[in-house]
Length: 266
Image (tube, rainbow, N blue to C red; front, side):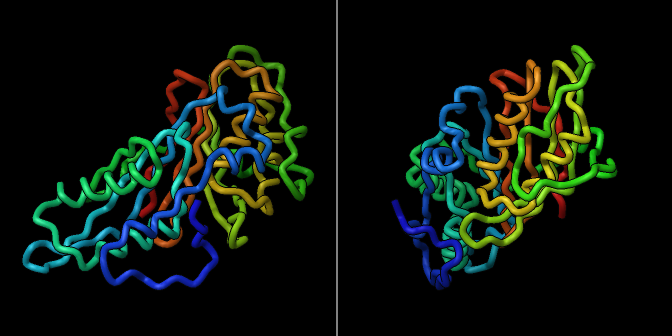
């Protein structure tokens, strides 16, 4: 396993270099968070968007596009964000004869690094995703716990409901650099109701939790499943971009169609 580049001073590659791509073991991350035994409870994808993807055409003229990447949550690895940024920078002065050639190269390098099938798309605009859900942001709660506390998540007396919720106040910390990561969390479920105040208190307790985006979403999903009587559940975190890259993990009960998200911010 390569050394993680996050938190370390790194030179921007002057020429194409796929060797900078650094995969991170999902299993190691899940074991550290105590989540490894619950992977069978969900399926999902990690959606990445790079707003700083640029290369040269055959005449040496820059071409810029937005890069959309996605791959399964059951892959053995996920990509380390700084290494992806450096890899994309290494394409900046490389000439290509077509946009398809750029896309094929990126896909091949990511497939190899992550040892899984990666969907890659170059686009003129970011994914447009509709925003929905009842916001929890203005609820009054008595306190916020210093670290994630699943015991404050409680079911209510409502039975057989379908509900879409959102929280735009979520913050966690990068486990390597301790820098803050901000996100809107979207939760869609069917089954017995979930008390909104307890759910908000739980989500806000991540404020000083150090965890990768993917681990945070999986922990939220698992804690809700364990504490509440829901039949179907999806959790999506739309994290604000950092370093030109935005990461949006989604975890759902198998076969459940997740319907909440937001239009990616410009």
